[in-house]
Length: 251
Length: 264
Image (cartoon, rainbow over all chains, first blue to last red; front, side):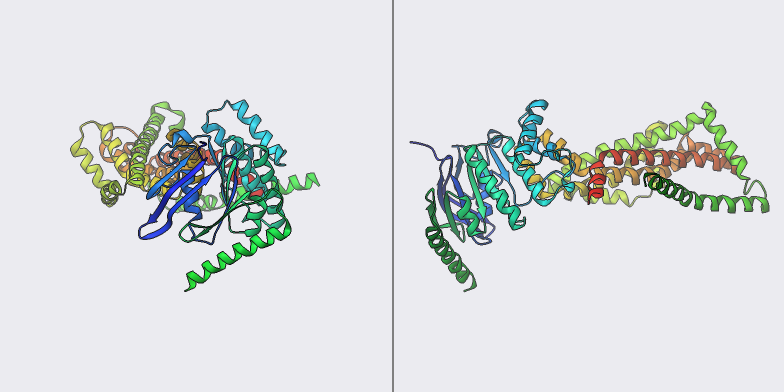
């Protein structure tokens, strides 16, 4: 029996009296590219933080590759990489030094670090900008550096928290395509959190819609080639769930 | 085109130097005028002050007093910085420690430097121990609170990002904490060096057998205004030199800021 790459078992998370996640059970298989959709405050980020090991569940269990991501802090070094909503580059490091960050945590030799970082920057179209500091780069370029930083460690799991939402539409579309291609080519398991239905349908092989407090309202595996009619039907279903959620909140 | 740009830069540089020198020239002019109107023992001529100041620098038997004072300032600040840094980290880590240490440090802040001098004379026999104690206790609260504030101001987003790579404590400190708090650390040194140079004189005035403060007391007893000014200038030069060194460290450590601002 194969062990799920990410496994949530009746996970609940409370912040005081507020319930952010309620008895969530979920498996994500190795190599899956899962888009998680939901309204603001539906518990997406809490779920994300629990996979990343940045938060501990109040009850239930989270296992990533069979280990507890919160308690087994050191075991996960180099195994999970995160692309955040904003680039979160260290302003005192150049682009290439930012990409090297994760490799430094893994104690890779300096020459290897530089070679890998340069190779990822080149792949992401940033050759020639390696010595630029973050403030000298555009928003799109900075987000590319943060993607390069995540891929450089060769982590098997990629967590992405609305990584393109702060970018203009053209840049976001281009980066989204590049990102999806890189994930597929490198056989990563990716969990992609988004607000956008279109983004979820274009990037996910599986779409999960969450309802407050982080309960699964829809879990749909997409066919390899989603027809425009199929996409439209799914879009309508997701829209319906999210609108219903709005009505519940208003009432 | 290139020549005119260079000329413009040079003229701007000259203009800046003139602007910086102007208030000193004004002060010197007023002093010079006063020295022609008042007796020498009250307002000595500037050239006499200049030669006395120069004599201190070139005569090592005198200059070693300047070095002693500089050493006391730096030793006191270094001690206060290390202890203050430890206090700040502990307060940042634990609310309970902050509730315990915060009021004590605030209480210390309210005690005048002169009172510490009196306490030190009563408590310590050794002169250097007295001065070190005074320098440390007067600078300690400021360093503690400034480093604590720097730790609190660290970007939560960056902390989360670095934590996501699962760093060791040492790497977390080297890669994130130190570069994040460095600007505030340099500012705290800048402020504390100015304060310490004033406190050290008070400490040496009453409790030392050497140093700028001791020499100032000597000039007062001799009623020698030129000497008093010459020794005071040594301390001013020390502060100016250390501020310049801090400027250079800042320029090197924060070069990323300059580059990014130019590019915008």
